Amino acid sequence: MMNATSQKKPRGVRYDPDRPLAGRLPPLTMLRAFEAAGRTGSMRKAANDIGISHTVVSRHVRNLEAWIGWALLVAGPRGVALTPEGESLYGATSVAFQSIANISAQLRAKAGVDELHIWCFPGLATRWLIPRLDEVRAVVSSEVLLRAIEQMPDFSRGEADIMIGFGDFNRLPDGAMPLLQPRMFPVVSAAWLARNGVPSSIQELTRLPLIHEESYAQWTSWFMQAGVNLDRPLKGPRLWDANLGFDAALAGQGVALTSDLLVADEISQGQLVELFDTDIRVGGYYLVTTPNAGDGRIDRFRAWITRLLSECEERSRIPPEIGNEG
Image (cartoon, rainbow, N blue to C red; front, side, top):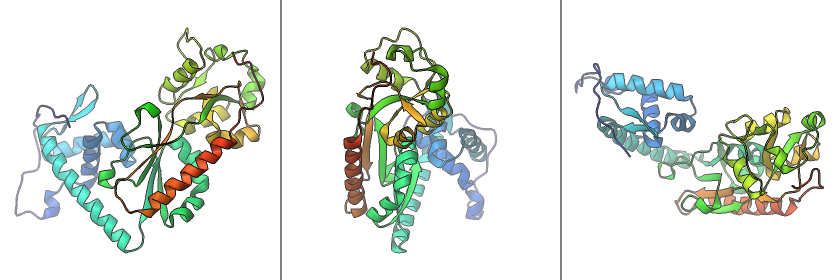
């Protein structure tokens, strides 16, 4: 973890060993925000991690700095970095939170209320996994806590038991098991198609409003694999995740890039229409699990999702031609 030069604040709480413990502890909401920011190195990632806005994370950190009397985090070119004082507080806070997480997990398991914690990329979580939650619960024989998130959990802290991610199979996280590289294809709403007609070629797509996720990377990679020369900057809104892109396509806002896993029902119902006959794979889904051995639920979930995704791939087909391939 990087640190930064100390910057002392003008005020803080004077240490007094005779004060009650509650009076010597900063508010836990501040500590939670600070710990997440220190661990992730980013206010936005910390916000995603604990489920609040990044502005609230920043405010909690500033309030904690005022309470402590020292600058704890400083902005850098790649996010935020811990000051030396921040390093000290982060170390103590991290150990304390980990201890609380460990004993809480033990007590929950002893009480029979243990849950299988699954983190999953938002598109797959919402469009594919949630409709199958009853099946997941039956397979793992326990309750399931599902979180739609793109961030990798810290397994050493017990944040999750399973992570289903999406990315380049050539740069998978350590210990990741490839699951499926789905065929990715462009879709539009039936209303959009009625207004604009079928694009004459894939090259023409580059001049249309494309619906992107956080960056232009996925569409750029797709066009490269399609052999299309990008002679101009891509256009269209950049949205946060696949779910927003899916909703935007349904609303007729442009052309989205998706897969059968996410939109098979909408295509079969005629709400979305696939453009062009292509078989292009842009990244894929992978599975990472906690290194803790002996949890049969994880083994059963791994076998279940591997089987189902394999069946989905076998059912996937290239539809009748709608536009021209090139």
